[in-house]
Image 1 (cartoon, rainbow, N blue to C red):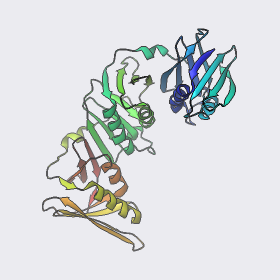
Image 2: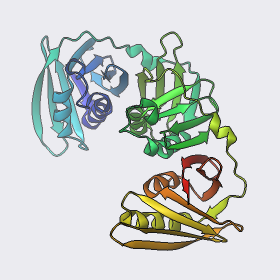
Image 3: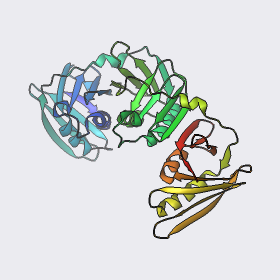
Image 4: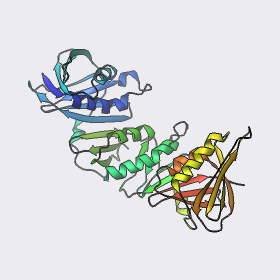
Length: 362
């Protein structure tokens, strides 16, 4: 008999479930692998490209050492009933099936049995003991990168590169075909995070976590080791792209003659015109220390808002996408805007992040 804290086991299942939950994951991959040791249960799941490993502490009364697979759908549905609950979970591993007996702290008791599954998938639980890495990024910086860039991913695009965060050694950046954003950060090697992986990593990062990186040059696989105070998790994945897209255009960006704009006023004005606009576009007229954002739609409805800005004698009429601009400025602490008339682009930045997007001039 194996004893586990109910909350620990449920949290472990939730982590692994994030990889295998999507409907597009093939049926034979919809399993959890449990590797039972003397003082912990290792859990793993995979969608064929991304594999997640985690572990939960246990008391192994009979010193059972076993490695087996069970249906991810069934056990995830079972543990979902006890999400957020305290109590104890007893696991009895038999020849053909596994029995789970729950004693929740509110006095509720129940038993659940599920058959073992025979699957030809290899999991390397020794990775949980990895001690050498190529890079590491603290949780504060990693969350900032993910939170700032993941919202710009174009998840509807057929081009996978439109939803990938790249770390190219000097910066983290994403280019979705319309907007390019970058955050300066130094790494020894290059890494890639697609949208699904970014969401999974974001869910695993704790307040004091450190994300460690290891790149296997022989296979191209990348390991992310999320080290926390009380537990550690591993994501092993094959990148969707084997090359980082060209980002040399960032080197040509100028921050000269930047216009300083109040972020909250700018956001509210863009949201206002976005409600009226037929196609999401907004007109922005820039003059000395003032920006006027306005729109007139096909029904004759209009919206018009002046916002304060710090700028010299600049006179430009531009057309921009309101929803795109809102996404760009959301992670900025302050908004600085530069216009590149020659290249039909706008540059927005603060002290950490810089974004470029296309605009039209009237």
